Length: 163
Image 1 (tube, rainbow, N blue to C red):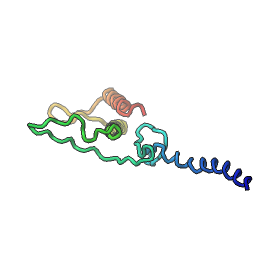
Image 2 (cartoon, rainbow, N blue to C red):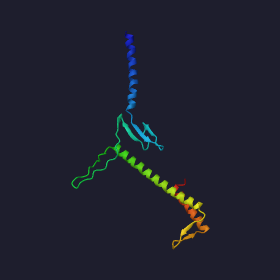
Image 3 (cartoon, one colour):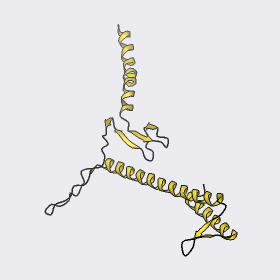
Image 4 (cartoon, rainbow, N blue to C red):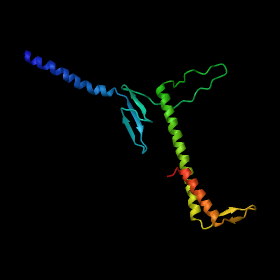
């Protein structure tokens, strides 16, 4: 009978360790990110633009930024905003940075498309005109056409970043 208990006790310790391993993984931080194709990815290591979803096993609620309260004449504005949590502040900064990056990219793409269309139109055109002093069309010479096309090409390269 002593042999049976001697075997059970040493086996209980490794079994307890095996059962505790999944619990330690559940306490890890979880980060959520979205790649360029729109695929959502979860990881235990932070990446640029990733948002923290779990901290030590507790779910973190991600709330949209709230408007700051307007102070009245007799009240001082609070020294700490309602969203004083550093995690929320970091998420708000990252969201604002992503919005700015998207807006800049859209504007850049529009400028590139406009410059490309202007260049293509000048290449495809048989005749290029400019407006005269009295509003009539004045046909450009071959040298002026070449200069106009070159200027349009340089403007396209500048707007598109040499793509």
